[in-house]
Image 1 (tube, rainbow, N blue to C red):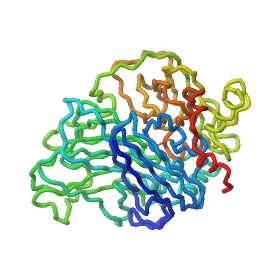
Image 2: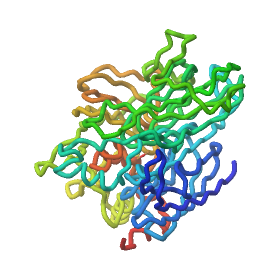
Image 3: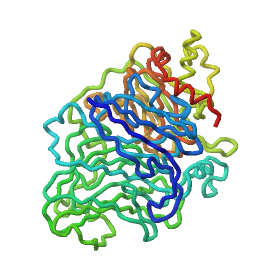
Image 4: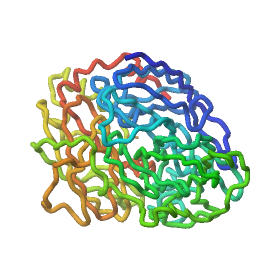
Length: 515
Ligand code: C2O
């Protein structure tokens, strides 16, 4: 294993990813930011310098941070946030997670551009059922807003809403594929120039804030092999729909056709859009070039995805078709916890996201991890006997000091979809379906294991995880607007060990700075 060091400078710049000028928040002047690529077991050291006017944090999505919960990059939970003009060195090893992921600011700052890819190569070879590939490509797709995110969030939760109807989430203007998109005939296309007769692994991540995005490549079969770090039996599809914060790897084989170049399509799904955004472009594209015609500038104008004509029965897949390639049985549950989630209109017409009866509001000037340490030093159990006095920023599921296997049984009481993400753990999806959870049988035999699960409107899902990772971990809807409106809670895993984590002084000092 080795140490990989990075320097991240976060700043505000003017950009125009789709040809429309807008303020952006970026790392090292780039959108998307630098890719972190490493091997399991490596140490990652990232010095993040904040040149913004507000605090920021960087979260390493999907990583377990076992023993280093304080470097999880979640504002008000594990750190107060890097004050303007200051730096923090995140320093952690790559443990249990391998596969495709991404990093991002843990607030709507990421909507404005603070995102990048994270690739962890496993120490174990892939099982024999996974075909070999020769090269890898990273594909980051995201929705795009022309307006600054904090303005959108402020209006979204206000009694006026974005469009005059309180509770309607901001609808994006367009989208990007590896940082480039198109709007009103402007913008550029991201290009991959490949070689014929080669197998490529495309690591696709939705690094956006609201829209699910369907990815496809004209005339090419995609073979799905990975879901959020879980290798799955290859499954051929025409396209794959990726919810916010989810990742899929697909294999794509170039042939020796003369038919190229080919469109890559990132199509924003409008299922959640509650109003028309003028001029909106849902049809974002990039280009794959190879073969004799690779450098042709003119692309065939095909308004809709032609699919794969040689395989007319090929379809898109959903997760129910995907089977982990390494067989596994989820452990027996020892505890369960019921959750009801929904967006609710407060009596003052403010829209808030609820997990049971609490809506998250970040603590100011401290973090839950620091609170847990204080309580421990005073001989109390944080969230135990003093549970009645917890503030809303402190709502969490308190687990025991022995490792438990917890089922989160979640009812979505709401007419919106929510991609739920649990930090520090990778839950098994042991059940899901329409309606509410009323004791339906769960399946522990080779269930899909992933860190971000889409919970559709009026559906339930059962997530099983092992509380073996000490710390305070966010569990939230990854739609930037819902998280900003409080649809977040925390899990306190192994509370006594969490309270004894050796929090670096630099993180404690952040909280003392007035911003
Ligand atoms: Cu992608 Cu709470 O994170």
